Image (tube, rainbow over all chains, first blue to last red; front, top):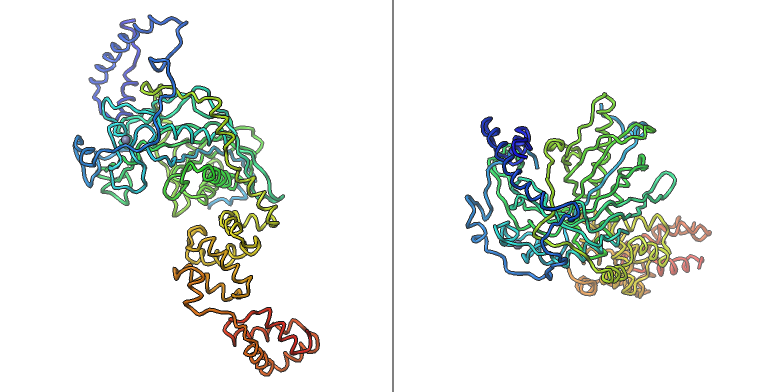
Length: 102
Length: 500
Ligand SMILES: [Zn+2]
């Protein structure tokens, strides 16, 4: 498994673009190798499960864990914003969103 | 030069796909207990779950599941025995988690349909709109773009986020490809959204206010040459926030696509934004490039497996379908097709039904809502249901006319005063001293004066030309300032002129 490239530099560049992260050429090469390493490590798990084991999305065989439609106290705006790097007019302030229209 | 719509549909066949998002009117959000009040001050309805804080775990609102199943059942869908939530990953600040919890390959309802009626050249025709899926997800926060022009992202210096809306239960209803509508595509699209809105309203699951965004429509449109048997490239128009806009957006996109195809250019598969002021659309981001949501099953939520008995109970408790109800009321009230359609278009059916339930004659109730009250609503540019007169007040006015205590003309004054906020009909009548002139001696005096003033007209009536009486009755009504009962005036007048 190791050594065989699972993720190309182009793919890293694309994911970075989706995440609005600017990466330099050397960073792309570096990260492509690193992500490969991570995928290799995770791939070991795939060997443990045979084709007879159905895919699962939750570790417990339970369904319908729900709550009644009853209001619970929310945070105050001050509490909600207390961890925000920047805020204004009781709102979270974020950097300009580039390249898109709303 | 812009193509004419007739020219477009003579050569091209449209296909539609409609995605409707509806915000449920639950008390709390989809995955947390935060309230969902519209217009609350910013960030007063948030908690660690809907702010996506580390370690916070979502839990599904059971009312939201119930509402979604009821929507699915009303749309003739199959309910999936075991459906799952999925994460839709994207990097955009309107969701603090960097993903939206939605449903992907296992939606809760699938394969339904909704029949809608559209007026065609050959009369009313039913179009069956097939429903691909109905699924649950959560709404996003609201962004406010600061700097640049008119709140648009383009040129904005930064954005401000309010997460009150983030996490409100949202149901997405997606149609299969709708073809074979031909030139009626815009009307079919509008009729579908309208019928869907009526169904959602009858279910009581949403406020369905397009202007407040609790019901939103995205319209996918594509064109192909007639007879080609192919599907063209589609564009997706977002931001369509009124029924009229649905129709305009579809028609506008059909004309735009045809213009491109005529020039041998290709239609770009992209998201476009509807411009309410011009009716045109403008390009948003290109889908081919931006869409990569990397869906995967939501590990923090368990599957939804609704009990079959519960589903059957919900099915048995569904309200009467709006279309069935309309047919029943039309037969009950004996309303011609055209007038029923006018009543539906004006949003008057509920109002007339309530007025009739309070004892008014259906024809009279309809007459007032579609006549004078509609006229005043149009003048004020508001929906009929927003006019400040209640079915109870209209029923009372109809009752007073029936008892001879109001003429139609006086009743119109009363209606105007009630709408102007001067009180209920009885207090308006008392305050204004409105009463039908029933003192016959003063009526007879007015009639004699009219005959004296218009001797030639009176002579015609005497000679049996009854339509001429109208001018004399008019003069009497004017003399009595509209307070006389026109029917009684006519009776007395004809008596005076030997025609009774
Ligand atoms: Zn919350």
